[in-house]
Structure formats: structure tokens, C-alpha cells
Image 1 (cartoon, rainbow, N blue to C red):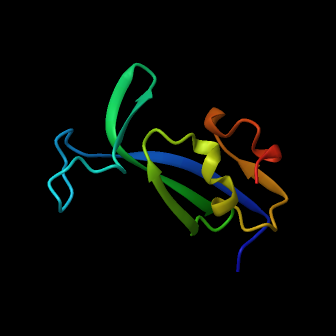
Image 2 (image 1 turned 135 degrees about the horizontal axis):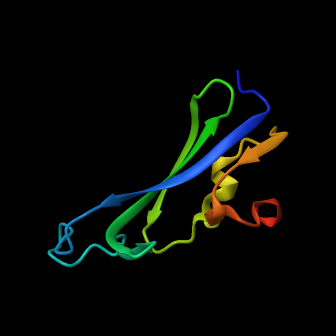
Length: 96
């Protein structure tokens, strides 16, 4: 049973820059992103976690260059009284 709050965050799933799909072309889902001063190539995994129980209730994957807030509607279950996030989700109250 989900409680009243969620924690949302994102992690980068790194891939070699030469990643190819089954047709031998660069995978269109893989992109570059910068976190701080570091550059990564790959995808992002966005995660929603119950803030009391610590259970993952939602996951979304996107290209690495998609802004974190773009997955907000897939990470929140809609019953939250509170949401905890980092600056990547600034403006989350207006998203959805």
C-alpha cells in the first residue's frame, strides 16, 4: 500500500558511444547528457519511490538528453501529499 509521499530521482545508464542497434546504425535512444562537469552517453532511468516504505512504485526510461521533469507524470501515483526531489525536478508542481 502506497503512503502519502514519493521520492523521485534519475540515474544515467551509460553505454559505449559506439552502441549500434540491430540494423548497424547508432541507436536513436542513446544520447549525451551532462551532469555537473561530466558527460555521459546512454539513457536515463527515472524512479518513483514511496517515501515511507522505500518501495519503488514507478520507473520510466528515456534518452539521456530528456529533461528529468519530462517523466513526472509517469513517476507520481497521484495520491502524494509530499514529493521529494532534486533540482532537476524544479517546477514539478506545474508538470503533468
